[in-house]
Length: 378
Image (cartoon, rainbow, N blue to C red; front, side, top):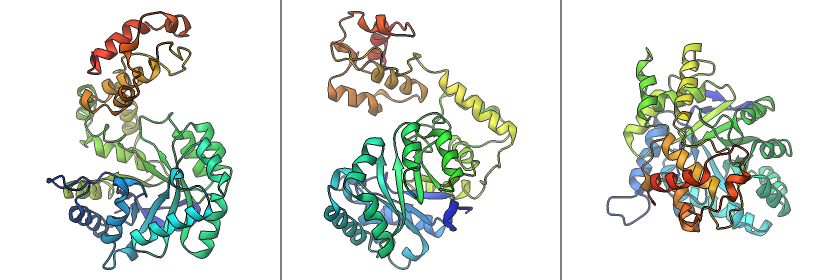
């Protein structure tokens, strides 16, 4: 296992950090998580050199922390750093923050949390956390030794990331990042900003929820043609670890074989390890993915609001994502959310207001019909 510097903190973490959000349940379906299997996976990772375990209060219907705590018995706690998170929706004042932290400590069977994160914040959630005194609470808990490092995980645009990371003396940040998200959310600009500030960056969604693990045909052809043979998973992780600002890359595993494959991959990576030809391959792969887009919608929302409640940019985003990553329409979570909210294209009456407003002059009406059919709702 390769270990990497955690920015200004003066510690090292394993390049592979085990994410504990995606453990699956037993075949019987009696529970959301197969506890003994998950404990085995966690310990297998730690035995292989992983020293960063990531969980959260809300993961797996609030059972993940409990299972992690059980896995870290028998001397395993002393081998790892635990990261867990405070969700905004469960806390409204200092008393509730203190109660939640104590609950997490009890579930994790430890007297301190190494990396404690304000969970999934954007500009609005940061303002909320400030309004309930979370920064002061985190400072106080750090002085008391209940947490070692004060951190945040982020989902939002770069401008919000820049404002939040500069607003306080953070110890670590966790961002969504992969070779398809270089300009999305915090993106490369956010990664590099954190690096300049000496703040270590932990990466989530390195495989984009698994979507980069199974390459579509035109992308796989590029991998196959390259002289060095690596799986799509290895290429994605290798590219992330090429960035010196990256401290740890989180990966969720459901099988021992996945743990072992990750241990192998993360024993071969290092900052600035990729040669020019390899970087060019990833650029070509990104372009090959993007060539699969169905419509060039930028999400500018000039077409919104639709008078009939159609979420035009949401539909086009789901359609593009389905095509880019060759998703089964039944597993297109983004579109499923639109269905639940009643924002699908079957509400379109072809009034033309959207096409008149579109700065790119896209054929929105016909494209909505095509999207509806492709997304399995036509």
